[in-house]
Length: 65
Image (tube, rainbow, N blue to C red; front, side, top):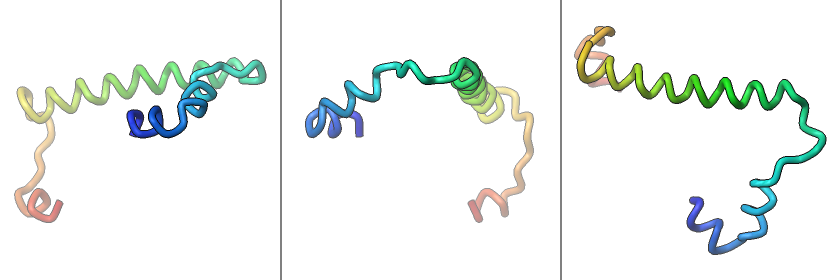
């Protein structure tokens, strides 16, 4: 998607990459926390599915999913 938008509308990418002056400080805090928790989610999911098997999911749920 990023490649397509970059080719079609590079001004949109430039606009989205700038930081507006009217953004509240708490909004920056929320985005920073979200980024940290997203990375943690990927790490924990990798350990759960591959090495540690913390969660048990019945085969019927796996098939349904």
